[in-house]
Image: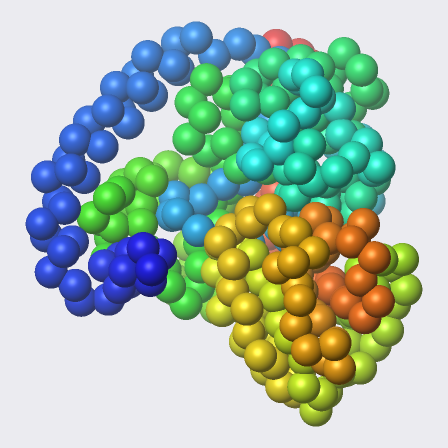
Amino acid sequence: MMSQWLEEVWYGQSLWSKVLTPLSWLYRGLFHLDKKRAIPQRPSFPVPIIVVGNITVGGTGKTPLTLAILAYCKSQGYRPGVVSRGYGGQPPSLPHRVDCDDRAEQVGDEPLLIRRRSDCPVVVDPDRCRAVSCLLENYSVDLVVSDDGLQHHRLPRDIEIIVIDGNRRLGNGQCLPAGPLRESKARLATVDFVVSNGKADNLAEHTMLLEPRGFFRVGDGQETAVNAFRGEHVDAVAGIGNPDRFFRQLAKLGVKAVTHPFPDHHSFTPEDLQFDPQRTILMTEKDAAKCHHFGLADAWYLRIDAELEVPFWSMLLEKIDIVLARKQHG
């Protein structure tokens, strides 16, 4: 498979990375040209904008961190809203205000998950500036979080957060297509926070741990304990950027899983889940957002929460307060 080959090129010792290096130079040149053109066109907004993104292709844990930031900001009295590209969705019009009853094929799996979990307003639009304007016009928000969008250069941002995979790190350190980087690793030195999903590699990074909280039935949300499937043989489904992370989590919980990895943002059909009827199906929360209406009798998703240490939250709150004060008095 192409995905397996790319994994070997980006995270292994394949000589193909050297062959593809000239294309990486071209990619970086076009990337910087786009950035140079877009930044002068950035609009201004009266509220702080936080961008949570990554510089590698594939899942790093942006969405759990986004959810944690929303919960923390709400606990501090802020009224946050979210903008997203809505990858994989086809809304009836743009910008689109996400409703909890929307389908993932309309709005994208991650925006729907965020809307349901956070109870914050979410607007999807590939033009994130237009999404921010829609959010401010229709909701009483005083803070905007962009789920992804680090490379959406026209979107203004006051705080930038990069999430990296603590295990895979930056792969071979090359930009696309020779490596997994969307932009140079030098970008890490320019953002406000670097969050490592897993143990941080240095003191400049903040460690984020994804802690399992329990399993929820896909159809009706009924909860059961996090150890409910310990020792059981199940079918495990993951259509995320790094399926192995989910499978490893299940193994740590003592689950004996037959694994079924799918591409990130895979558009599931009931036929995709035709496994042994005697086995329970376990999946990620993001995948459950696309499967909850399938009428699955014995399918559950694992809820995970991002945990970060107190210094990260203190520093984030301080930066938000500084930005807000500047905008109010500027």
